[in-house]
Length: 459
Image 1 (cartoon, one colour):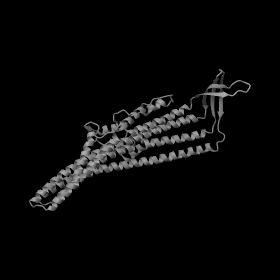
Image 2 (cartoon, one colour; image 1 turned 90 degrees about the horizontal axis):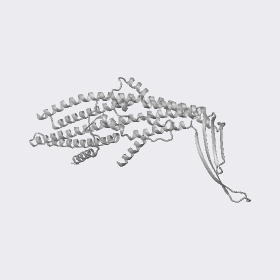
Image 3 (tube, rainbow, N blue to C red; image 1 turned 90 degrees about the vertical axis):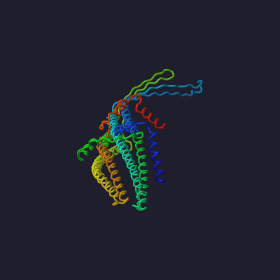
Image 4 (tube, rainbow, N blue to C red; image 1 turned 45 degrees about the horizontal axis):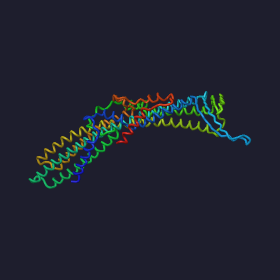
């Protein structure tokens, strides 16, 4: 009775969550899910903001090539000698400007490093996009998997209920013993517990879908054919080594490290700059000057040499990191390829298992009506059929997930490669707006993020 009551309450909870969820189309496709995940991902918005912050590093580096203009004002009270009357105030207003003329390329190298960092951050954003889309695929397939599991368990409860009734009828006429009835009752209780567990797993899968996509799922259609990946493992690994965003990001980081070595080497050279100043005091006395300054370090306690050694060590670490990233990417492709092969083989095996189990179940039921099989035999055959059907459902879901996982390991699980037909975030828009270091800019992306945060807070 407890299992039955718990199953009913859990089913009501799942139904209630479906009623309070946002209205969606009656038939939701995998493409719809991927689009929603891409358009409503807070993780993507977070990393887009980090990319815009990296864009500003370019603007700040560009600003070092431009004049620096400042102003100052001062007001002081001077005390007069005793033979003069009173104290008097002295005020002045000054305007100054300074421009670096030549620094042996240090500022330009800083710009180059900032630009390479931006490109590396863009690749990191592509990696985040792949994570978001893969999580959406997994959430979609798991909801479908758990929904079919619930349907299987509900059908299993109905069949065992019929078997229990049949056993009770046969017990009444003396064809079976009380033991057969008890076996059927125990199996029915176990089936109801299995149904409750399946409903709980479905509720959890729906919550994961909501976290990954931004809303509860609707009625999910069967997924389309798995996407094309590569014909061989070697081909997949070759693509990943050249196209995976982690590889491209690591390569950019090596370039940044090499530029930083050049910056550290240039730090020992002097800087040539022009400076000028104009001022006026309370008596309208005007002064102005312009000059050429040349200066550089002579001795800084070994700091410059240390910075150079540090840059070289950073370069070595980046190169080693590129090697590690390559090995990791190739390993992930190999694992994904193996997972896809296993999933496809499991589909073929479970198809045969389902066909054989269905034939066996039907045969056992016929033999039971003739008295050649017991109630336990029928229940065991039915359980084997249920397990086979569940295995096939899992294998089909795993095959879809494995295909998209392989696509992600190659670096191709993106909106553009999947051809989802929606507008994508263009990182160049903000970069082009700020890369020349404008005095002010309004970030439309930031405003959209603020709107997203307000909606989240309201919810």
